Length: 151
Image (tube, rainbow, N blue to C red):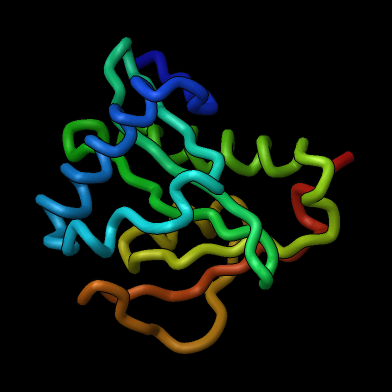
């Protein structure tokens, strides 16, 4: 399977990403639609994963007062376990690494329990207590600023 991940620049690509998020979060995981789409859509950098020509995954990242938050990682059910999530995390981390304002900032995310092993492969570590977001259990996971830093 040929997987590529691209930074979204066209509205048509963003619609594909939103459709993937709708399928994974709203339909499959029963997240309320008004919780899934938020005021950070326009200020985030969005990504689209494509496997064998089919849009199948998405993610975004943004600056916050706590560092850099990676979020909205979603892979369509038929493409899970096929390295799409790994490709997305790697591409997002590389994009962050290349951003001139990322140096010294902590990268973090709110990981669903089932996704924690994926993020751990990249050096993320759970921090704090387990918590619920949209009735789904999560841990905050943090990547220290000296890991995967801009070179």
